[in-house]
Length: 360
Image (cartoon, rainbow, N blue to C red; front, side, top):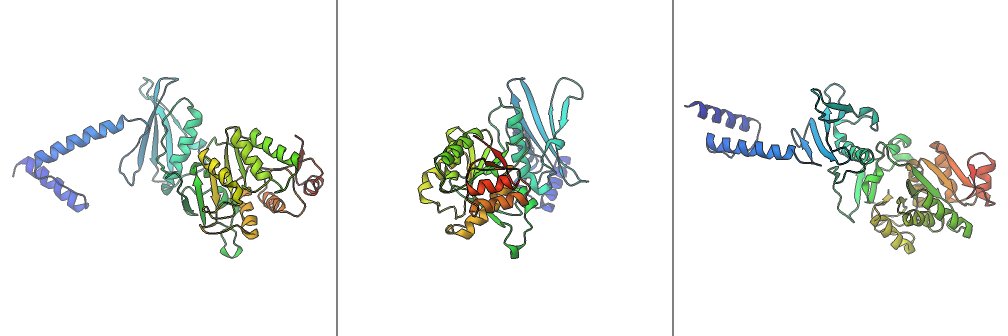
């Protein structure tokens, strides 16, 4: 047996031992296939906005290249999975002509540690981070594909499940505290809080505000359009806040109390569609077919407050759904602000030091 035949038989045995396909009949055919694989690998390595993995689908290293037209530099994100700490490390680098090149570890800037199974979330967060750091670059790809108009169900063990819920909820089924499943429609990326992400502002209040309340809610939505406005798609203050944000070109999250196949209230069908079309997000813990009820509407307020970085109360009664939301905001230690007006709920919040007053 020639040396070429021995090499071929050894490769064939190795493939059989590792349960890999080996469609080659002889050494020359295998060698030609190896050349094709090398050429394909070289083309992949030179592609921009492409996640190149060493051993897909279970890689230990990944790389992602992009070109910055401002500095005319070719950057590379390098992801390494550590065997000691069992977490992903991230390095940003480019070749500056020096023997060692230039590199910077991004781990301190990331949102905590990412375990091996958190790779999906890490990619999403990194791309959001790079978008902020390199605004002139186009074509970003986090490798997470969503079918437009199709809801996504997230289990609480999903790598992109909100960490805020893990922090604030105890996952005790008896207390009905934690959403074991979340249902999302729209831009799923808004559910994550990656590095350098914009603040989330919850704007809440009465379903029957006066003209001043509607105007204030709308203007607050506009004012916070550079951030993420969180509200509940209800009549009154919620609707005005969502519209103000959208009219100013912003993005908003609506946390609803019905299944995603049911719009509550019905008159906000067009508003929900507009939120989705504007890269916003509709979020619910209720499965499809569930109608809104006092229980589900009160329950969704805890999700709003868990997502929010601060809470703004426009107008409310002393006994209202808004007060339920404020109770959760207090429990989660969120900053609370209330419009300085004569509504009973606002006066109670301000006079008892629960909320800081503001005027608009």
